Amino acid sequence: MKLFKNKKKLYKELKNINNISFVPTMGGLHKGHETLIKESIKKSKNTIVSIFVNPRQFNDKKDFKNYPRNLNKDIKILKKLKVKYLYTPSYNDIYKFKPKKKIFIHNFSKKLCGRFRKKHFKGVLDVVNRFLDIVKPKIMLLGKKDFQQLILIEKHIKKNKIKTKIIRCNTVRDKNYIAYSSRLKRLKKIELLKLAKIIKFIRIYKNNLILKKNNFNLNQVKKKLILLGAQKVDYIEILDLKNLKKPKGYNFNLFFAFYIGKIRFIDNF
View 1 (cartoon, rainbow, N blue to C red):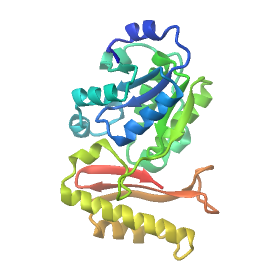
View 2: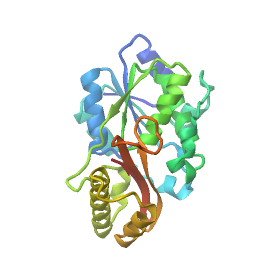
View 3: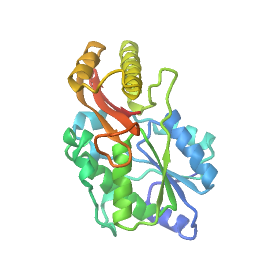
View 4: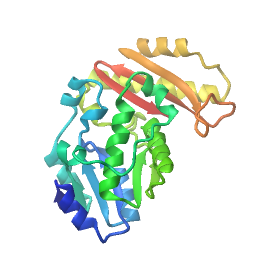
């Protein structure tokens, strides 16, 4: 595996390679990341993984400071997976240049997480736009757990006529249907139990919605999540997966964000 910390050296390495597959990460690699990377390598041996904890997408400085970091462990995982390239840029390497494309922020950014994290998606799109400018991948693989982020990146790429194709990958979950996340490492055992109970309740609730055993009642669900151990509930919404509006049929997911202790979790299914 070749490690790059400088974009100029990376440019030189990738200059004559066309079939580049890209997996952007913030490190703290887990089974979800591993699945994305394995799928990427299947599609192209020229897979590049980035590790960069982007400060511009954090609303809380403490959250940025406490974000799980273990580069040595991540490197071991990537070598085991036989990743060809790793890019670990500094802040200046990413932000001290003017990208060719302007950021396009679709109105969907104002919904769900956008109502609670005002600068988050601008920060995400900014860094992704810069990575695309540097790496110029043919494909980029993203997980469906961060569905809102995924949609906004797709909208940005389409608006700017960027040639990179997005590959949507299914969320990887444990035996309790909890989506793997770097932040899980910060939970205590009792908090993990609370999280498992909440996820189980939401799954049953969605199934009952499909079977029409109950109607969607936001306040009722919020109260239940608090009883099950959520510290705070930012939102629970149902959206049609195609038009991102209130669903009329069965093609919908439940989208939710809540806190267990000080850790915020988002997911959808």
